[in-house]
Amino acid sequence: MRNIDAVPAAVPAVQSERVRIGVRAGTIGGTLRIPGSESSVPDSSAPRPPRAAVTIHPATAVPERLYNGFAEYLAGEGFAVLTYDYRGTGASGGAKDNRRLRMRDWMDDDVPATAEWMRERFAHLPQVAVGHSLGGHALALNNGTEGLRGFMTVASHAGVSAAIPNRTERARVELILRVLGPGAARLLGYVPGRKLGLGEDMPAAAMLEWSKWSRTPGYFFDDPTMHARERTARVRTNVLCVGLDDDPWATPEQIGVIARQLVNAKVQTRTYAPADAGVTAIGHMGYFRRGPGAVLWPEAAAWLAATAGVAEK
Image (cartoon, rainbow, N blue to C red; front, side, top):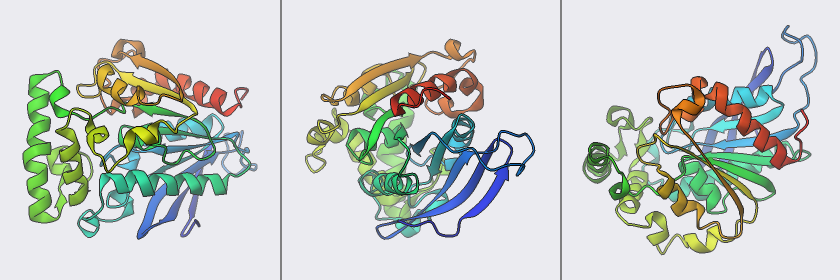
């Protein structure tokens, strides 16, 4: 893997650069952040050396910018942090041009490619990771885990639409995943995710695979081509599964569908309520927003540091 077209941009406390990461049949666009100088004056001294490396693997069709605040916070705490978009989304190419990309391609190709890039770029540092929703699925399936001291998942659940407790939300999700999404995928070759409230536009094949998995009780564990149980059993590292109790889809039970398959990992779980963060709602995306993050992110940073073996800042 190699970094091409890197454009550095320094800010107080954190330095960032845009990166391009090679992957099979394409490239991934991302942002690398490292600790800046201790001084409040930019460029007044050399950047602080990072103490560990963190790769943040995103959720389905969620733009990289959602993770900006969290990544900047972790970099300010002394981590080197990579955020990125999956191929066919955001800065990693158009959805229509990548219409054949499936969800498994993101998990099996993009996640390992970014993990490898970080492992090579920071070979001297302990490696940890954070996976949001689909990103956590990929890690649980033993993708991008080579050399990891551990990983944290956030709202990573079996996306079974029938298990959504709220009837209105269940009807909305099933309309998207069973009717509108697959229809647009077949007609247009991509899914206009922004118009459907999914975040970024996404490739047709990814939507069709997501739709298929969402209709089975065990999600991708019911897909024999995924070999999911064998893969989760190979994970032998430290895992923290974070849930939000007002998430309408990623309920504790659906998070447990994934977590319980990590039979050889050292799994911890934490569930936060909005009141824990002093806010009225968190939901599926809110953990990575600055409001809840002011309270929740220090615990994440502490867990990542302890897992990496660099607890002392």
